[in-house]
Length: 94
Picture 1 (cartoon, rainbow, N blue to C red):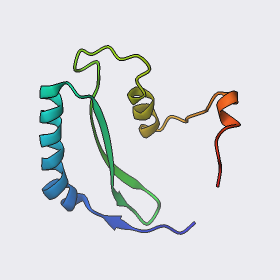
Picture 2 (cartoon, rainbow, N blue to C red):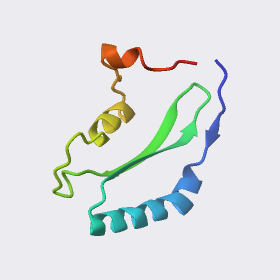
Picture 3 (cartoon, rainbow, N blue to C red):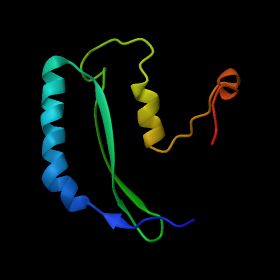
Picture 4 (cartoon, rainbow, N blue to C red):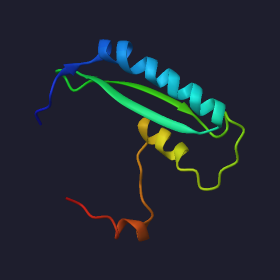
């Protein structure tokens, strides 16, 4: 499978990282959990570089029922998502 090769590491460092820092400060002050992930590079051999950040409910000392943040963080870290059998029949595949 063919894929694009790119490296936006410097763009991330100079333009995006300062915004993420600002967002994290605002979210911390207002107790807003978040998870964010950027694909900043893709190499010729298929290797991918990510930059991620999060402010979890636990870090904010919040109790949230059915918080989907933790499964999303696990998936971003490489875990596989397997829907319950009843959910699988409702998913539309391309």
